[in-house]
Image 1: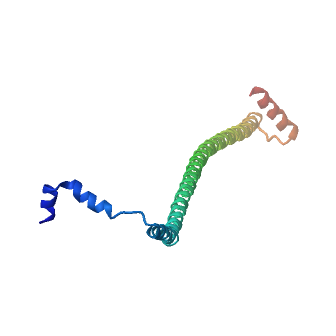
Image 2: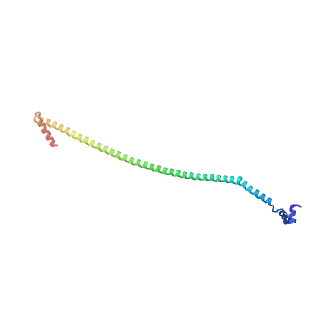
Image 3: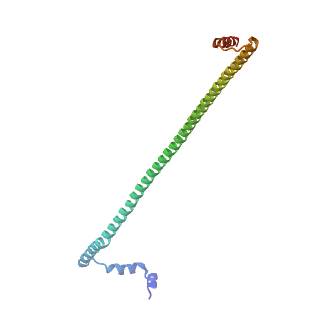
Amino acid sequence: MTHIQLMSEGGVNEELKNVFTNFAFQLPYFIFTIISFVVTILVLTFLVYKPVKKALKKRQEFIQKNIDDSVQAKTAAIELQNEANESLIETYRKADMIIHDAKIDGEKIVDVLTKDAKAKAEHMIQQTNISINKGWRDFEKEEKRIITENAIEIAKKIIGREIKDEENKKMIQQLLDEAS
């Protein structure tokens, strides 16, 4: 009979009774089983559990170190980014100041050059006026001289003789000065 037939005919109960009747408490087997169990636990503890625990601890330390390093790197990157931003802001501020100073300097240069040009123009006008006035004075002197000479010539012809006396020349000059 096969095993399947036995179960179906005799039932499962009888088969179980046969199996469990062979299980009787035997102290030597019990002690041997306990010792084997303890030895197996010790072997597993020393050969498997501790190395696995040690490897897991190393792996955890490695992961934690990587996490800490990445946090430090991120913090350093943020600090560098902030420094770069501050440097960029400072650069823009300096550029604005340079542009502003250049505009002010340019305006000052324009003002100075304008003032210099006005001063030169005024000086040239004054020099021209002085030159014109001198020319008029020279012209008036020359005209007086010519008029004086002509008056002396006319007086000579009227009087009929040459006027030699310096005093007479002065008198004629004085009359001409009063007339003008």
